[in-house]
Image (cartoon, rainbow, N blue to C red; front, side):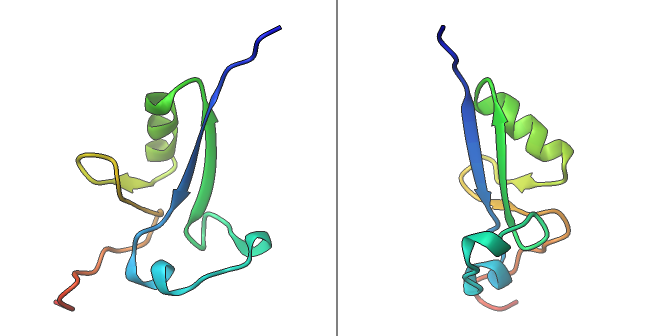
Length: 75
């Protein structure tokens, strides 16, 4: 038997989440971490978007539900 799958590990890129480094046992969606499993990358991204995660255009950065992006300049 062959079983295939894809796992997408999401880490929020907001300023608050980047500063806070939580131990693995405290990493939850509310604190900016989520693992999503699916058949492929696209399926995982769609599932994450349904849960409220936001992605940039080339899907290299993301924000957890309810988290806000802050500019690097502090504006």
